Length: 111
Image 1 (spheres, rainbow, N blue to C red):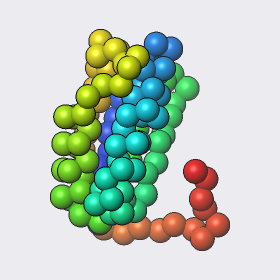
Image 2 (tube, rainbow, N blue to C red):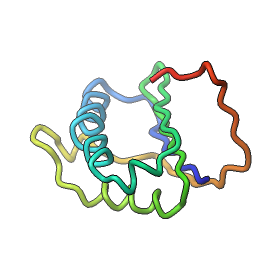
Image 3 (cartoon, one colour):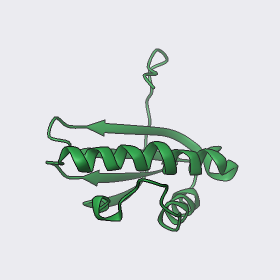
């Protein structure tokens, strides 16, 4: 398995947070869901938030090629109506890892 950690440092203004939510809910998630190759290889997706608007996304997939394909899909997609490129500054940094070990409790499952 492979993981990508995408970090958006805080603080984030309410306008930046709203723009990120619009991009995620109206463009990024639908794109990923519509692409069976990517969707079916995602093991886990975590959206982590801090009080100051800082955010981290952790995506775990079966292959690194899926992370490449997902990045390409998102970065080449057209913005949806209402998205303002000035409010989408991009991630502060992104890091990739090979998953050496994973543990998920059977009762875990907040979505």
